[in-house]
Length: 276
View 1 (spheres, rainbow, N blue to C red):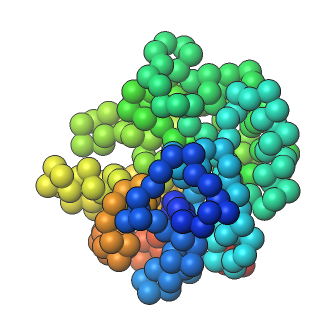
View 2: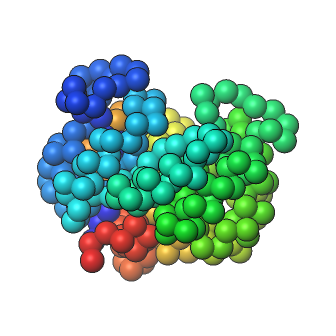
């Protein structure tokens, strides 16, 4: 079973108004994604809220997952520092969310201890508690500028909420080729921490004329294939969907067949309860 663990949906349906524009060449309706999954031999996908387009209105990913419960799961974005954020978590769970995604609000470049408050501060911890109560996993979108703050703060949060699986998007913006790996490797002994590798990571390697295989093999060697998952990042990262899947398959070619299957779908299927 192959699963795309990171597919952004964008529709031109006026029932889902956008907070920011998206070009017609940057659309991925739920039906189009399902067609792409079928054409490329994938069973399902995690529909990740495109916050840059829809803000905190998760209606489209939630409706898409509800309409296609055997193929799609909804990952929703919220502001963990909002006064009613814990209630929002319960509301999203009631509406069928499978996971939450947090990112630094506005993408502003914070410095110092405040750089991790958006997910590790006192207010944000209420969101983690609500996620634990509702059985939702957590996904963190980390940038290079706040990566070190996030990875330093994460172990304490993880230990405080052992029932919440945590997925680090885009390998937490860690550049393995540049040996910026110490803070990431410090998370290896925390079994609820997962790492997601995406087309964004592969594209960065391609620009440096590097093959994606060594990155995937390095991650699998340290975290294990059961804590490693792949996502296309379609609509956020440009390119043909078929090419993204082809690159992903090439990236896992150096793994054993069972480990390759875990990275390309087994881990995501188990984490997001997709496919039975």
